[in-house]
Image (cartoon, rainbow, N blue to C red; front, side, top):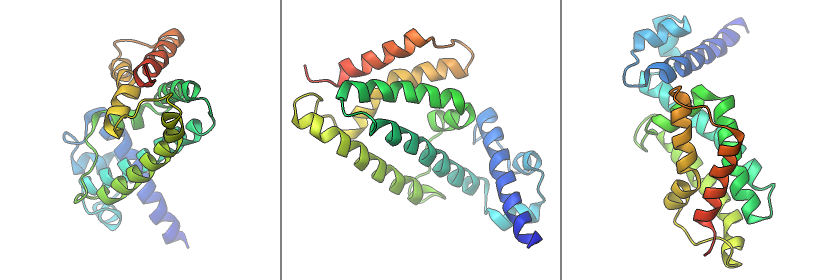
Length: 196
């Protein structure tokens, strides 16, 4: 029983250490040795749980993406009104990034794993389900002539692109967003996505 607990602790320590290291240095600049040092695990323990640095990143990215998507969909479905939903998601995005800056840095600045890379199939499947849930909320508003028919990628860029850029400035220490600015970002998203 102790070994099983130690195994779970080792995996969790590796993931937590990777989150710190990747968010500070980026994935490409992080070495396997620095990951092991950050998490305090032996070489054997590391390879018991993960095959490579890329494997750790794939698992971590998939977990972060799922966490973010759950918060997004949970907030979105609380709103029947299109404008309220659009603006609430911008506010939720900024709040989530403020509460989880290390995770947000990875989502914003790192390329997600591709389908043939560790974590890639999980990320792709999670993303597909996420877009389906968002489309289920969007479709009635589009049919009612309230929201524009926008392809998923363009929808994401118009909805959260400016908020993402604000987060980049925030994380770099260049600017701390105000509540008024966050409201303006929500309003800008609404103006981009509503029917003319």
